[in-house]
Length: 128
Ligand SMILES: O=C(O)C(=O)C[C@]1(C(=O)O)C=C[C@@H](O)C=C1
Image (cartoon, rainbow, N blue to C red):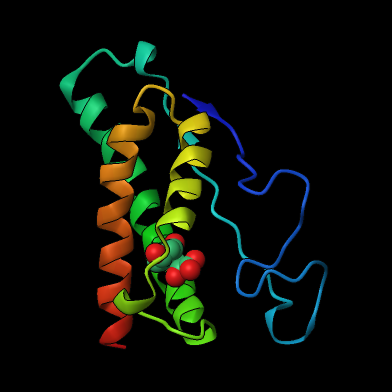
């Protein structure tokens, strides 16, 4: 197991809540998620493998919860929010950027994953 800190916004220290850079008012408190990244090559047993997956899934769930909250904020800021304001070009851009970090999944599989994530976020935003 190797601990590694990933900075999802290389270089720019943009506020995840509103996109502004630097410390500012209501979003000044910054929280971060640190995740141990297990090396698949070091895993020898089914128990170890499942424990590694449970750790990664816990991080994924936390990220998905925060993504849904930010996506709901986006819907309030757009002239037309929700499913009616769907933006396929933006969704393609998201998938292409993610494919650089997840080459073994590639753009087609990531598109399926992110379509589900985006639709779940829009659905949750409608019920907030
Ligand atoms: O960026 C937007 O315009 C959003 O509404 C956010 C978001 C997303 O969840 O990432 C949701 C729907 C759009 O089709 C594109 C992206």
